[in-house]
Length: 330
Image (cartoon, rainbow, N blue to C red; front, side, top):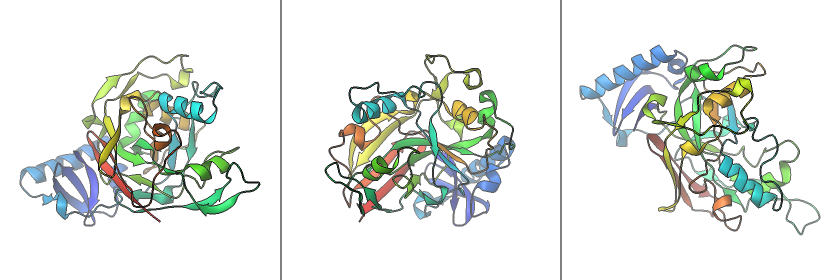
């Protein structure tokens, strides 16, 4: 894969197993803010350096968080995932809540706990309420889960008070990463009503060490949405054809594709900024769990009967994107 990252305290361009060191920088944020012309210039310098043989081996590079995360928003953009979760959590009821088909649902996560691939994931503690208990307990989660997602990284900021149209949304997107939005399902279940996820999500979110430019990811037409979205969410129905997989302890347990997303990144950005909220350099906009061919979370895959144990190794992979790895520690 090809992409931007940080290596040995410098902005770096990766081409396969070779890495070109371009300029001093602890994060990619200054490059990201330059816009498409600056991105192209940095990429050209990296490709030329590697062509000259001036790259260093990828094996000699220590993974680092590639950019300073400004804000982190996690959406809920896979219809298959939302339907699966609705059937598991609300059996006998309509799986999709009424608003899901009209807008990209999302919540604001904690930017400070976004970590780079390879960071050990410590099992979080929090309030849980067992079904047979009269009151909650404070303990380590027993229902630690993964969420297979793609994250879009904002480069060019927008102005506060000025919505970004779906047609111009990609002008602000620097690139994409894989995301594992680790989730403590028992903590989440007790706390999420009425205001949504909090401590069950905020303990760790892992991302790739390398950010892939969007033009390196193949695009694919998407089906028309029904009901038709409101005018501000209407955009060309094109997504990303990125095969994805989940590996647990060396065994691939699920495969799906980013093309199954119902809400596109253009629609996510148009909705996020529709009230005048601004984009900032370093914003991370995750898709939410991507299910489709197969589930993108263990909750769906194992129907809530099994979760991660201490010592488990999880690796998420996507064609054209750098992998995301994490090991569970007690």
